[in-house]
Amino acid sequence: MAPYACPPVGNPDVLRNLPNLLFDPDSPLTIRLAGLPTLIPWLSRFVWHSMPARVRRNGHTLAGLLKEAMPAWRALAEQARLSDLLRYEG
Image (cartoon, rainbow, N blue to C red):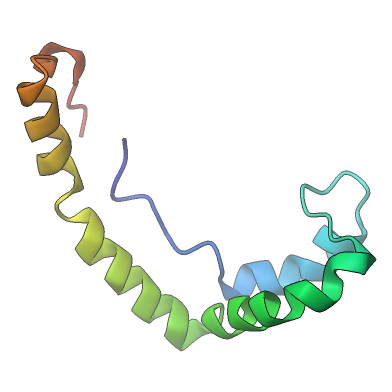
C-alpha cells in the first residue's frame, strides 16, 4: 500500500501520448469504433480532467482521501488481529 503514490490517471502526459496509445498494436488501450459513440461523453470528461488545473485539483482531492488510508488499514488489521501482517517501510 502506497497512499502517497496515487496521482490522477488522467494528466497532460497521457493526453500527449494518446495517439501512440491508440495506434500502437501493443498498447494497453483499445477502443472499438462501434463503442466510440457511447464513450464520447466519458472521453470528453477524461480530457477535461486531464488538463493541468484539474489534475492539480484532483491530486489535492486524492491526497485528502488518502490521508486517512493508512490509519484505516491499521485499524482494520488490528480489528482482525492481523497487525503482524503489516510492515512499515516508509
